[in-house]
Length: 167
View 1 (cartoon, one colour):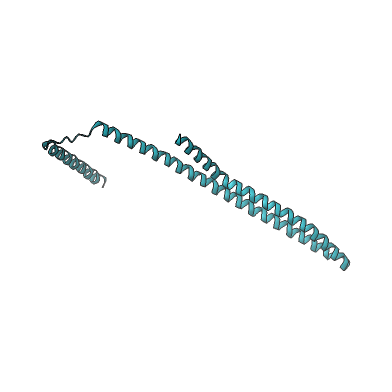
View 2 (spheres, one colour; view 1 turned 180 degrees about the horizontal axis):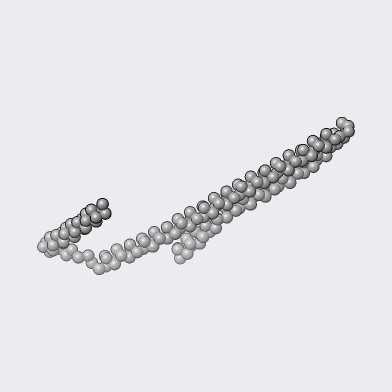
């Protein structure tokens, strides 16, 4: 198949060259100069070169954006895992505290002792819940910062490059 394709390509190229020569000869017979002026060729070459440079820059910017999003997604995944571990740890501590209360209540000698144990438990538990909420808030802030940091850095680089390009 490759040999057939290659021979077809060679035949097509030969036909194109023959057609070009024929058109050029006819234009020459009419007294028209078919030669492309040097200035037009130079302009075309310069335009192609500039277009290639713009393409390369945009490709580099696209690759940098993809890398940024990969970093952001990695940070978000790690943050979600850390957040889940924190919630599981908090739940484990709360269940453990509840079992401690149940054990204490089982050993109470009177209803007054039970009320006192439960009151002390809830007082302590409200303090724990406040501390746990702060742990979750701090972790959420860190995860958000870690997730958005690559995007912010990319935006700053993009703005800096845009300023340099406009000078």
